[in-house]
Length: 309
Image 1 (tube, helix red, strand yellow):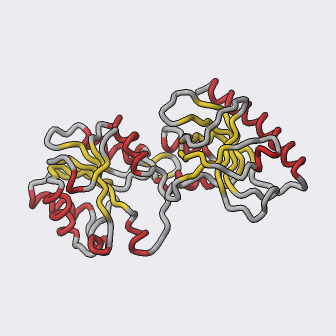
Image 2 (tube, rainbow, N blue to C red):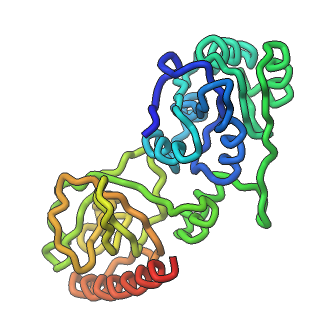
Image 3 (cartoon, helix red, strand yellow):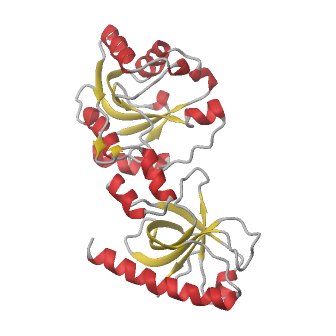
């Protein structure tokens, strides 16, 4: 796995791709490709953490890919390190020229910088690609500006991936990402309510900064971290409106036709298809019957997707 590091700990000099690259879709990969085989510096991706809008406007910005997940995605692209620049109000107050000089040049020793054509930087987003070109020319730094990638529905963006996940459309999200969308979580002890009705579940503790699909019941693949075998599963994202109307939203996974003690293990989940929205049933018996139907449908869906993968 490539290292995840602060700017002062990075290997230098660098050839860097600068941006958030959240979701790492094809548009992002074009920017990264511009520096991935560069011989004049260590191929590096540079991003801000936390997201600038969290610091400046107090907005919650859930990530499609958390930094430790992104390192696995970047390594096959020829990137040798992921550098996270701590974003705070001091950094936000720096001019475009100060940012390039202090962070990219003096700290990272940048020899080549690649960005998308809509990239903005510096105090009040004053800097754009023309600014970066001028600064690069004055400092002898190679600058690559990569055009926005579009398809028949407009420009590729992380927002489109989020919208697909919000709609429970995992197929569309996969098409945009060119890979399955996944998330992971540690299995922690629950209240055992699922077991009482015949459907024991693994209760996952998910990093609160991770973007999840919309509430509902899903057919999903589940695997234990660092192990190759994957298991068919039915998953619920949301509260428990029938069993406990006051319960908080949670992620619960039931392995189909497999009994394993998962407590304390980290599970990697690949949701494949949203079977239905959440619903409050008249009683526990009706809920159990519905879960039986969900399980049958989940098996059919997962069989088809594995057959035609």
